[in-house]
Length: 400
Ligand SMILES: *Cc1c(COP(=O)(O)O)cnc(C)c1O
Ligand SMILES: [Zn+2]
Image (cartoon, rainbow, N blue to C red; front, side, top):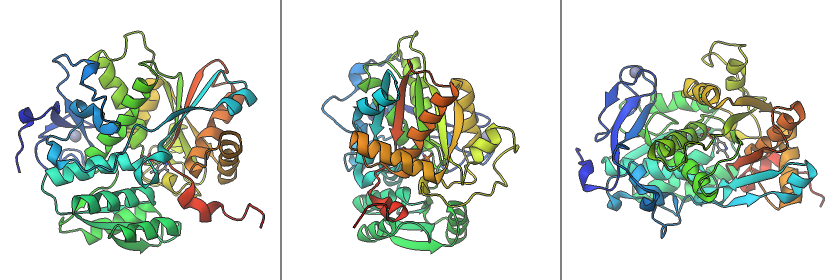
């Protein structure tokens, strides 16, 4: 199907290979780049001036940034109200740790309970726009649930392949959305292999992280929201729990686009970006610290933070580029510490976060202790999911 961008408010112009820059049409169905078999990245026409007035203030979802999103036609939008999540101050934790400014963006308040709603809302809208009839995904939990929900809403077939050890709540929720669930012994990488085998004929669109270009575009809306919610300023340091890395890469992409658009003043300093990983599965940390050349043969194991159990992220070099460009770093957090972080955010701030969110807070504490992070710097934590569905991972601590 061929679509014409000029009928639309979207400034979508092109797709290019993340490794070598080769261009591809943004107006037909694409997967990874044919040149390098690596992620494709959407590019927009940002030469014509575009003021911040294009933000649709009446729309309190991620779709308010429509001009900078890839959807061409409103009729293809598949939405459950994702995005525009709250930016919360954490005054008690800030006081306890003598931090001058500590904020948390609570992505657990998205439809389906995680920020995966942004990526899947966008990817499924584009799948519908491009005439796809069904989608398949390997997942650690949240992405599969989100894909199942948006496919249900779009009227598309959904197949979700997840590790057998995934908390039951994720499996059950997929059922209620009418998706077919297949369980695999192993991690998300084993599920990915099963998806390739099962979908060898290409009948379904593979929505694996960064194997189609549009989940990234949904995730980048976090970057636009952060700037808008902070009145077009940015924090000094931003901590993000990185599995496949779409949030890290997407937020950084949004910052670059906003710089180019002039939405951020030339003197606004971009944050140092911190990728937080689970000690049990930290391929990026190992590469970053030079213990391996890349993640290709990394062996990871399961962690409480299911979303971080990604041993072979396809976007590894894209993540490393963000860390380099932003002068950021990588921190590994143990499962025990993630629970300590969840407890801090729960009892001091009233937030029941996913283990990934607990990890991010503990990484901030670690960086404070090492002096990498200074007490007078402003810090933003991304809590990517709600704790509710992970209950069986962290159960048994309460009395009675
Ligand atoms: C998927 C997931 C992550 C990791 O996101 P990536 O985009 O793969 O880096 C972090 N936290 C939660 C709760 C997730 O579901
Ligand atoms: Zn290429």
